[in-house]
Image (cartoon, rainbow, N blue to C red; front, side):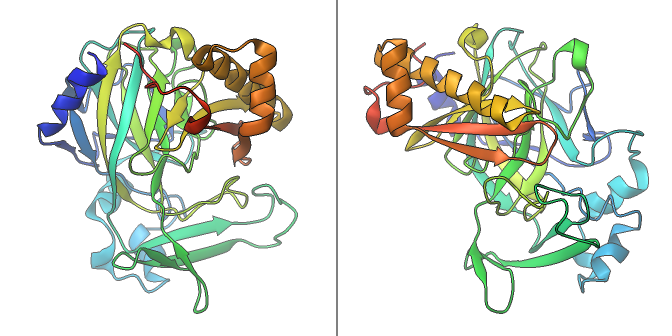
Length: 344
């Protein structure tokens, strides 16, 4: 499907995928799981998700949130049902993902374009938790620190304290296709070429994510909603919150041939990523992909593209806390000749 043809599909109403037992995976990104929903390329889906916070504390989530003054009827029924009926496998990650969504026609070697049409809040509170040995400053805390943070949806702010308000910028911490068979099921904590726990804060409403496809149907999963996060996610968590993104899925046949790692774009920038357990190597990978992107898009030599990357591209740490580190390069669209990301 071409981009022009896909655009006409936005007129169709979005399907709705609920976050209920049977439509979730706790801590793992499998391959070949039965579809929770099957769609055509170009179709949009509103996806209910839940935050893992309140589910991983070892107590009933009603009691967990009740300790912070959240009434039982303000705890999502989805959360209560998952706690009662879904088991977390030993060694699995903490995140609860909704899916998989199968996209008809997607095959290994294709590219899945995921347009972020909207990201809605499902509740008016989130959490930020940390503790000893956690995050990029593992020596800073001597005890577990849990914060329940209220949000004001009408004003678009998080009420961090009586004196500090922060502008909300919701995005999904995890968006992933099913991983290659030899690494499936993948733990939800470290990200990879299939996407996953990238914590890429630019993936807000209006942005687009591009993922290489490894399995038939692509088998898309999402979860780990964030109401707000700084680059690096340095204490190990953002404002962890239950969100409902509306996403449009478009398959590009053979599109993964020049897509070794996830890429993204928004109105102002293209974004390339690099991932490795070593932050320096993650940065080198991101630089390599930025140079290749610039060389191809602007018809430059490697030397010219390397120079342009040094002059115009910002390299940022998306997250520095989930074993595999993520660095992304923000390539301003204004430095490139006018062209769409996908040329057909």
